[in-house]
Image (cartoon, rainbow, N blue to C red; front, side, top):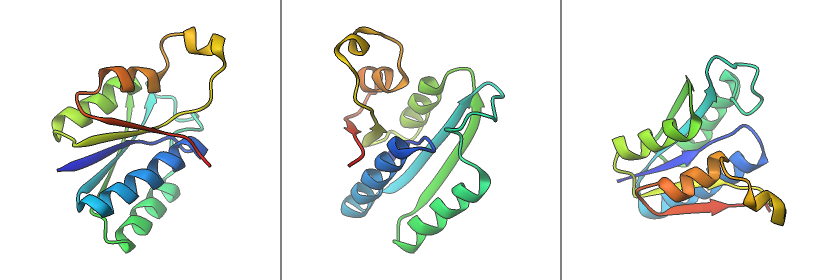
Length: 129
């Protein structure tokens, strides 16, 4: 089976990637890293640069993890991640989350919230240390 990580180029994405890599090693599963940005917004700081993608692939390969990084520009990031989860029948989805205030928890529409609620597989929501 396959583990999918919703990756952002920040501390939350790195936490999700680290946890996903740990799970992939333990389960002997392939790891798919989905890094998407809305439309053609290549200035989005959560969209990984080519050098970062290469570093991710090299680091995970050195650990013996079969890895595929999928980068795309899409209308909706959550839809892109969910499509990847469904296309490989993922065993688990890993997302990085940040602490939200009580008022922030009432606001709907965050990508992580949609992934947690709509994923057809178990979801690990991780925070950075």
